[in-house]
Length: 399
Image (tube, rainbow, N blue to C red; front, top):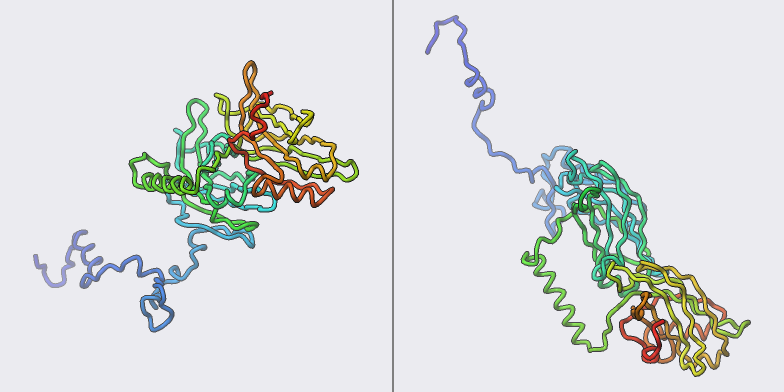
């Protein structure tokens, strides 16, 4: 409708918005990737190609990723491993440090903090805690756990959890599973998310920093990831079977101290501790104790036994036994160390054993020879307990 000259034309709101929003021809919408630098492999410099950032980038696009994500700076000398670590993930992120000390055979796990955890309680919060497991292995034998932080989705733990008896072989084939759970006093605790870190990614004596998104638990064996993992385990077992039938089942670790005292003219055997023992009781634990024999034992007087530690798979004994014997005679002997589970009213269960002497192999033989060659030096070594009972101990009573 045309108005008269000099009259003010009335324009409705729809026409007004259309005029302001679309004053000219429609231009294509710029892709979000145009706002960030893209670097292709093998492209360096040169005339604004694919490997360079566009010249019209806003200052935000040139900001360092750490500043955009609000990431914290780890300690100097720590290696960082981080991916998809933003606060918008569905399950949350977990920040932690791992350090393997090869000299002491310990794995130090520092659980620092979590961010943006999934709400699990009716109040929109959670009561989170962290569990650690070493795989493969019995869950209760190597489970470590932090304290619970109440009513928070951004908990801060700053707790140090330590695994003892971790050998170089463990580093090559074991995986650390880190689970974040919600504690519920009235029902079962709820799973929030997990992270699995192959220990082969660690370097001895070098702290590695992680800031990683939590993942969901494996849904079912029918899922593709579980199927691939099952195939991997099958191939690994097949490879071990092809190496020969001499492979023995691992039943835990024991830390022994050997020292020949030239002043007392005898062998000091220290039973320090065990780690990750096999569970022998229905409650998922054992009541372990250790026995030692020095073979051959004609007079049957070489038996020593520690105290029983109740309901544990990681006992500490710190007991020492003495064998009065000349160094030349000791060179022909074999030290047999066996770990047993104490049971009331029935035969005790054999957990595992190890033999140290001239007929032993690997670390057991080296530990024995080093003890004889370095008198008055206390030598501590971790040894793997196997399911095979030493031949001479087979006829012995279990008590």
